[in-house]
Image 1 (cartoon, helix red, strand yellow):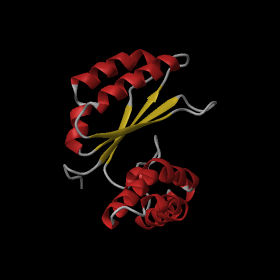
Image 2: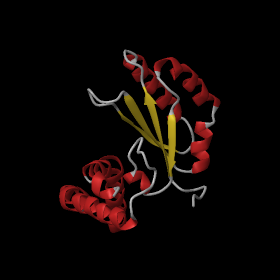
Image 3: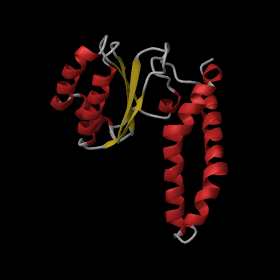
Length: 182
């Protein structure tokens, strides 16, 4: 169940027309700049298509709450941008809203929207946290040794969450997708 104050992620997929990629890249810059102006915006990541694969661009947009995300998704500003992108894309956009850890495990355009089993999620999160703990924390510990204990913990947790959300979990999900989704 989603609560109004829960962190949310929108995964938006656009299939770009051949030869329109440059225009689409400009469009992304503009809409991302406007999205950053909205309350609760936490960040945006663009997953570009791999050469020789589909022409799908995946936009991963994060807000601090469902009401803030909905304000952006339903805004006149966004509607204007969506009108502008129509000549650049082949079909209507696909929008998935994720509200919990399933966002770490959801593959864009996944045939079945079913999340992996919880024990598999827990194991992969454990692996991700171990990676950060073993590789990153020894590098940052000397830099933070003079900070108060609570601030060191807060910074350490923040770094862990960012690395897990943006780098480690997406990569682990790709590597273990067969095991996760069976």
